[in-house]
Structures are given as C-alpha cells and as structure tokens.
Amino acid sequence: MRQLLLAVLWAGTACAPFTSELPGVAPVAETTPVASSDDAADDPAIWINDNNPEASLILGTDKQSGLYVYDLKGNERQFLPTGAVNNVDLRQNVSLKDWSGDIAAASNRSNDTITLYEIDNDVVRETGAFPSRIEEPYGLCLGASGGSVIVFVAHKNGALVAYDLDGPTRATYAGRVDLETQLEGCVFDDETGVLYIGEESRGIWKASYAGGEFSTPQLVDETGGDSGVAADVEGLAIYRAADGRKLLVASSQGNDSFALYDMANDGFLGRFKIISGADIDGAEETDGIEATSVPLGPDFPLGVLVVQDGHNRPRGQRQNFKIIDWRDIDAAMTIDE
Image (cartoon, rainbow, N blue to C red; front, side):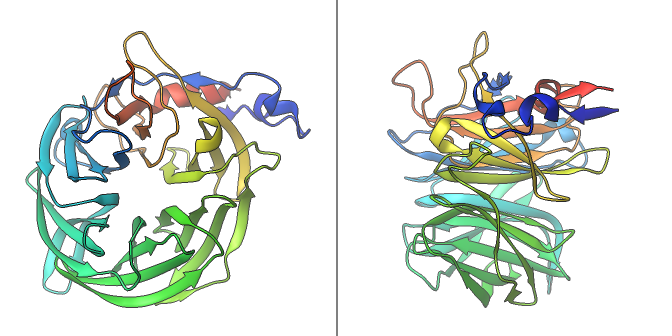
C-alpha cells in the first residue's frame, strides 16, 4: 500500500513545503508541436480506446486554428481546422435522445460557439455547433449526470454557463453560476455531481450541480496561501486511483507547478514540477491538463497526465503537450508503508 508523502510535502507549517525543492517528474513523450506560433496550444482531453487501450488518443487544441488528435507517442493523427478552439473535453458511451456514442466539445472563439465532435472508430469528426449565450466562450468541461451530458462553459467575466446536450449538433441552456473574475479551467466529477472551477487570480472553487441548479460555490484553495498555488490557476483534472482515492490535479501556472488535492476532504497534498528528462524538456506556464487512471497498455499501466507546455524547447519550438507516466508521479509523491 502506498501513501502520499505528507511528512515531506505538508509538514504542518506554512513554509515547510516551500523552502526545499519540489519533487520533479520528467515526461516520457511529447506531441508534435502545433502549427500556430506564439501562444497557441492550450488544452488536452484523453479518449480511451476500450478495445485497445494502447491505441487511445489525445485531443489537443490550437487556440488559433483548430483541434489536433495525437496517439500516445505524441504522433499527429488528425487535424481539424475548426477555428480558435480554446478548451476541449469529452465523454464516452453516452446516450442523447436518438444518438449514442462518444462526444467531444470545444469552446470556439472564432464564432462564439461550442463546437461538437463525434469520435468513432478512432476518428474524430465535427458534427455541429451551438451558440454561446455570452461572447467569447473560454474555458470548457463536460459532465455526465442523471442521464444527461452537460457542457460547462467558463467566461472571462466570471460567468459559468451550463448547457444540456440534446445530441451531437445541439444543446439547451440549463443554468448559470457567477464568480467575480476570469474563469477558465473546470472539471466535473460525474460520481458526486461536483464541479471544480478555476478562478485564475483567486483559486479553486467547487459547486454541486444537478438539474440546472448550482449550489453556492465554496473555496477549495486560494492563490498566495499556504499551499503555494500561484496565479494563474489554469487546468484542472481528476485522477481516480486504484485504491479508491480521487485526486484533483491543478496547474499552478504562476510557479510552474502542479498541485494535488484529496477530493474526499479537499485536503492539499503537495505540489510537483514537470522537469526536463534526457530527451524531452519539462513543462512551464502550463494551461490545460488532463489525467486518466485507465491502464493504457504496458507503457502506462497507471494511466497518464497530459499537460500543455507553454515554452517548448529547444528555444523557438512551437508549443506542444507533454505526456507523463503516472507511475513517475506516484513515485515522486508517495512512499511505501
């Protein structure tokens, strides 16, 4: 049995975790860089191939031009020129009225819509779009609850709007919650009906959602506090460990680190960095992230963490996504009993 190394990462004093160097993990693979220059790559999602997990795919946005599809070695499989898509998420094996399958959605700032995609036979295909009620849809995540698939869209004005998907081409407005400042990253726990929201300058919030109703948001962690999380708070992801623990992973962009929380009690567990390895550079100024604990073949028996890299090396390379073996995170952040 493995336990989180709280004695090192959270020693009970405000300064203890931050006076020593954070644990570091190196990527084992990276994607082909996106075609657009400057700040372009943004947010990944992971599609699991149920029949052959080693053939699973990574979807990654180029927020200047479209959606990329990569294999687990980082090779480009597809590019869909669907516009300035910023965040992407997906749900698999869902039923929506007269349609069933695997569906993805992305916030599209080219035309203030949410672009929808179907994933079938390892191929991603654009199926339609629906308009955003507020201009410039920014952050986005999906949830599945009570037989519905919900698209949560976050905005720079602090609004987060929920839509119920009616199928692969349309959706219906379902509700709204407001925070004070710019939002982007979010992730929904399908099992508990809790939505986690990143308010970039303030911290991480959570709110229950069911049937179009949000509970009053509660602050999970604040930037500039004892955890060391630093603005901007960017991507959020959930990792479901084999022992039943659920971990919230957050990109602390302001200090190039990644924070872990125990979702059972919102307890902060520690931070780590993604450092350079022998052949692949680390990750800095990370925007979007995604994680899965599904075994993805012998290379990734505990799943992966995929993160956007804001400064791909060597200098001058366009941005891309880094792939981290979760075993390396586990080894860096845990000890044996």
